[in-house]
Length: 277
Image (cartoon, rainbow, N blue to C red; front, top):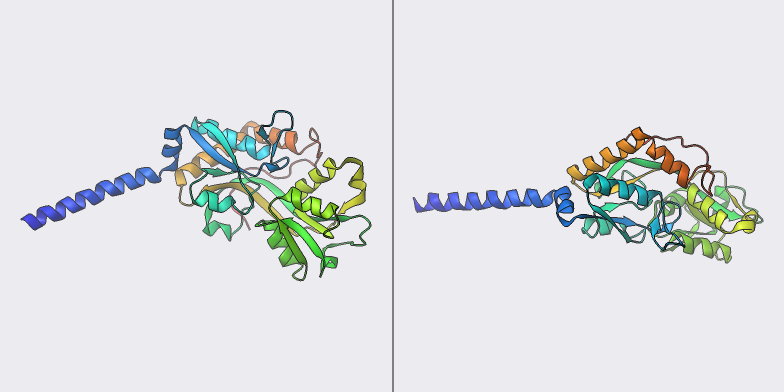
């Protein structure tokens, strides 16, 4: 009799612990209890996320998406600057709730984290000096190329030209400076970021050119901690609402389109799927 009571008590305690565990595992509930959504951003990747020189506040396309998710949850958005290499570890360790950090959605990363609907589609290209004599990507074999540490750009470059001598930096702006200083022949980044870098140097942009070949065409997405289905649902619903209302198109035009300094071509993607090739 005592043994049966002991077993029942243990089973009851286990049930309570499991119930608490399930409740704790619901990140949406945790976020709403603390009243804020902590969003990891790079803060160095204009126009995705950067510090406005006038207001000293973080702004950008990724920042606006983070704000939209926070509004959907009814909480305050709090932005935390992180490095490219630290993006996934910061999310996995619970230091941030959501990644909005120029994050490429790849099959390899699906084993580590979950992804929202695709929020942007970009091509990875290489910037070189116009007088370098380099006409396309294969000619970078054996030459020094710079990019951001821990980025998909680094992986794409290694795949495209295995013999290239790839030097990495904590941030993309640091890598671009290295190219300007003559420490490398090429600088690898997403096409929008390369356009932004060229805009920033004004008249000197004619001294550089973007090589024609795409190393990869990549879908970018928001990153979510593995297994947080409720949070993914909220994030995806937010993104679908932005697309349906026309706000997603407006955000693209503001940060990338003809209204922006980049003046990139009209958007050719929709925010409607989390599937990748």
